[in-house]
Image 1 (cartoon, helix red, strand yellow):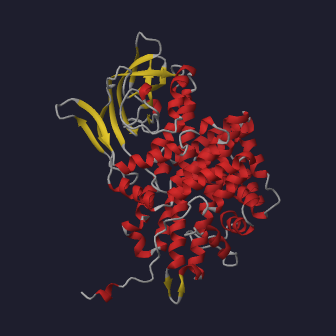
Image 2: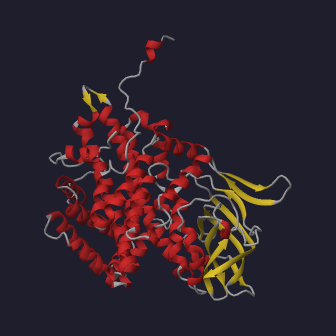
Length: 548
């Protein structure tokens, strides 16, 4: 066929060779806003280096390869010995090494660590989402282990190491470790109190023998796991190492890896314990209270993970429409497409702004012991986890549509984002679990509602639509009749009011105006691209455009 029929024109170039951090104005401004001035120069340098790495052709290729070559389970060696090893593509290990070295597991050991880590998570999570799961759990294991000072002293420096050391060996000889988690079982799911795994005490103080299973065990290649099991005094948290100190393998039978919708570079497994050695973390019968510290941290990472997917989807959509021409002009200049892109950009910026506020609150709790911020997080984390993760899937689908047929093709990367988008809404408690958790906080912890109201009240009087939304929310909260059935509605309004308050205080006027008009003022349709036409949508889109 004649070569002239294959001339390629009117196609957007790949979105590579740019600084993912510097190109995200909502992110860079958030870091400047929340971080102590003495730390900002160092943070900008670190995040800029990570941003350039994330936008590089090499890192993007790692993400493609890790996703295209999922992990493989090897249950036995050639001689029939049980080994239960998971093999990953080299690209996975490169992604993990970069994430660990960038501080995604070391927030607990430096000032402003949670904010800086959150920003890095938002940047590096745009390369490939699957590998951020073990990074998240390794980070989140630290507060749970602090329930036992001796265990924390033994393990915390390994978990917060900036050296990625792959392979199954005793933790004491490794430069760094990664952790997984196992809570859910076949019969219980989110109802972990229905767990049937048994923990029998051994002669050694704090040591137990576990017998049972986990229906979802995340990152089974890890060096250790926090798991729940029924001890004599009730449900209890345990630390389960994969390799014992004498070098022998702890019984940990991986039955199969899950064949998942997305998140395909990451391994999730069904495992069985049979005489498996573990150490108790915290007191017997207080397993949920102990492991909830890990769950709270991973829930925030679900918000960060969704915000990262949303940002990358919006960046790809705006980048494509900036270069693609149709009907006599660039797509980005067409009023209707501009409306869609601006709407997507609003959703992404609101998610990023909220996620960074939560991370800054974590720093305040850790660095100063702020009870105000602790109470604020009690409502804000589950509300944000509920709403931001649910907005991720419709946003990814609409962003994909901005690329038309090109977006439906695997090479565009958009299908991978779409497949990944529902995950964070399910992991660490799905929507109903989050909504009911917010209700518990509202009913049992009045200081949490007070902290939330003080936070959103900082913007009172700045926008009449926000003021009206706060008033309507208070009316909703005053009516306890049928509150459980209305829980999703209530939590959605909590999240939107919080996002609106943050944007009114910190975002440019055109962003705050568009958000309040649509999300709080009711001037919005049921799909993206239905913003009021009178708004300054061009400025909203330009603010979100990635440099290339």
